Length: 555
Image 1 (cartoon, rainbow, N blue to C red):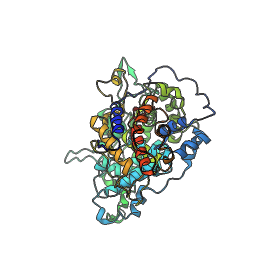
Image 2 (image 1 turned 180 degrees about the horizontal axis):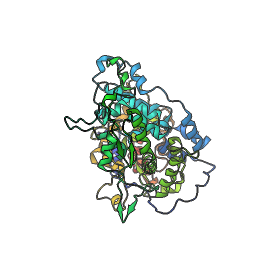
Image 3 (image 1 turned 60 degrees about the vertical axis):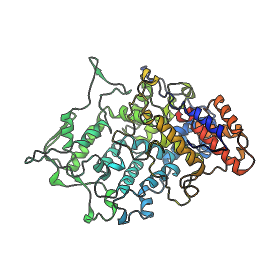
Image 4 (image 1 turned 90 degrees about the vertical axis):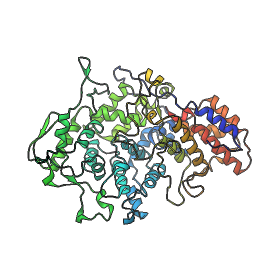
């Protein structure tokens, strides 16, 4: 990490603090039955309470959002966010910037910018958080969007699709992704053809496998609380190879909807795929104990197949638990999962799969809101690198003067974040929901810690070095992606006041007093009294707080 002559003790302190970044994270896994409904929330929501809530429900806390949560309460804030209209789509931003010029057909130009712009600044912060969560469950990645060119638009269309359905119904989302051109590209069923008796070629089974394994029911049959069902002490698989082969017949005949056969503009990447009847398998399609009759057309077959999948009892605990993991904690109790599964199966009006109701249940559950859980050493999740960066950006009103948003690809773990939007290395996401870091106390406690799969010595240092530059100079020096620290300037000469505010804003007030005292000692060695020196103190203080385990581990 780079050193400056003005802040040697600060950065020495930072190095000491960052050494404990691989802190344990997880949560309880009680097998007891669900407790009674949670008590009403406290009449007074502190700033720290509001900041903790926003760490789970947004792309990052801001002073204004903290005040709003305090004023209206958790539930009303969620309702306001869900009612908020989405701002300019990623697709429309790319068009407005001229990236639909034919010269860009074979490039990814513009994608990272349109993705980061939404994550860092869109007012519908809850929708962006849920969209990001869904992008890590129903995964497609730009590197695998192959066919027809226009990769930036294909990736933008996929994220826009997830955003559109973030508060909709999960069954509708499954239909949308199963007909989307980007998913057809990524999981290779675009252009999939029926069995060829001459060559012996069978339909591509890629999507049929993953739509079950990753997007809906998982590998093992589950109880409503997320625990595996066992028979005679043995876990039970949800599907077999025969089920994959039978379902693969459904996903034949789908290809781009090329209106007029034109690929000189990217519009066909946004349209749902169309059916080529002659390439669709019309024989019986048997899977998961159900059979779609012979001579059923392609569109009807797809709808019937997804109805069968969605009716499976596994969908609620399998998807519900992953949403809890993406928003609140890595190891929710079985009671928490059971309560969320119940809402997934019935939103109170008899509707299954209502994501708005599920998200609200996750965020308002006693296990998420009760501050006592924050004191449980096993109740937590590692804040993934993208969310660390967005926490900083949101807290300090990051903007792009040029509206270019040149953050770029942040995948490099040694020099950047080790993670970048829609750039997962595989359909299994950046990390598995059941990942256990080996030879750790987390493993010894039989807990999981998904985000640790992309955490190592290189990524820890790379993150800090990247954020040090970003905090101080932004991307591209003074020209792009810069923060506004004006609200911090009046506090900067007083190290204690500055750190106390940053502690609440970034870490929900959880940074230990001893750590704050150590950081204050370091800040007190730095010059003060002018705006230039105040800014240097602000830069150092933010980086120190963002290096603490209390910030990096969300509780």
